[in-house]
Image (cartoon, rainbow, N blue to C red; front, top):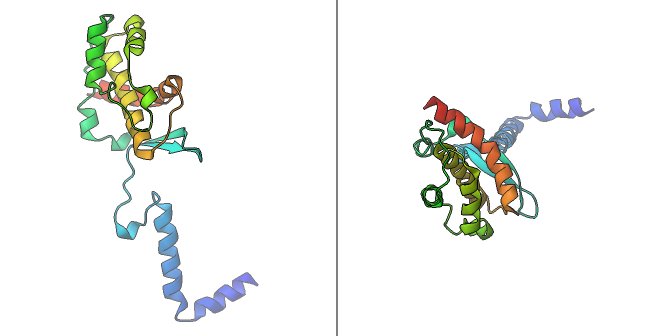
Length: 173
C-alpha cells in the first residue's frame, strides 16, 4: 500500500522538487548537525558532548583535523629526567594557561595544591607539558560546549583520551 501511494505521489510533477528538498534537508542535518547548503559544517577536532544537565559525557576527537596551532604547541620528546621543581612545573602550567579562570569550570583552575601534586609526580618535562596541554584542550572544548566537568578526576579521565593522540603527533614531529 505504501509503495503504491509513493508511486502515485512521485508520478506528479510537483512531487520531485518536494522530495529533493526533503532529501537535501535530511542529508544536510545529518552532516555534522549543520545544513550543508549554508556552508561547510566544520566540526572542531575536539568537541565536548554533554548530557541534559550540561555535564560532559563524552568527547568527539578527530585527529585528522588537529589545527596547526595545537601541533605547534606539542613539546619535543627527549630528556626523561624527572621534573620536581615546583617553579618549573608552575611555568609549564602557566604556559598551558591552566591558571586562568574558566567560566563554566572555575573549580578546575590550577592552584598550589594541584601544583604540589604534579611536582611530586616526578615526570619528565615533556610529559608534564603534554598532560597539561591535554587538560587545557579538554577545558577549552568544555567551555565551547558550556559543559561542566564535575571534578579534577573527571578532567583527568577526559584528558587521558586526548593525551595518546597528542603523544602520537609529538612522536611524528
